Length: 158
Image 1 (cartoon, helix red, strand yellow):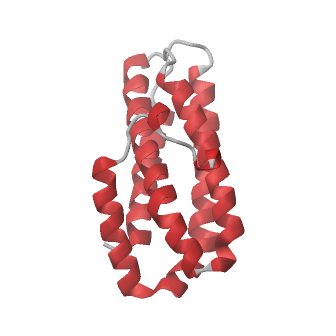
Image 2: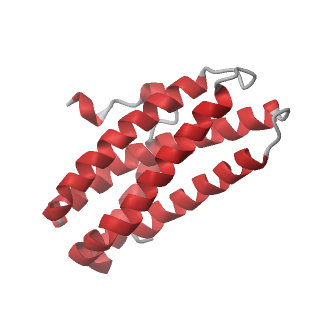
Image 3: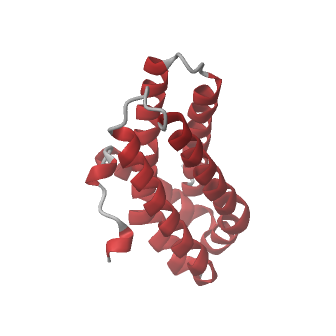
């Protein structure tokens, strides 16, 4: 599968989880915890494969996207931090829903920038064969990617 298609599929999966969370009632604490746990796992894996494989390849193929990629890495850092806080938070905590809302805003902004502003440049620079090869690498990396945000070394750490 094409790497950009794979990443967009991940974005859609997370957006569906966000919508489920938004539709859940304030008393649906068990459901909210379950959804949050799914979001934590999905976003942790996604951020890791992007930072380890996709971003370096994109930066090499389309150097003009470097600023976007560096900003995306910083956005991931903030998201992983929020995920690690959500992981240990009780859904009855008055800040749980607020933290999820802030997370959703941040992720939606990040996805929009990736998909609209620089994925098209990467697609143009890489071409179909390279994107398919990269997609295979991303797919394989998902299997070994950390699912716990506390286990993710940050790209901002050097």
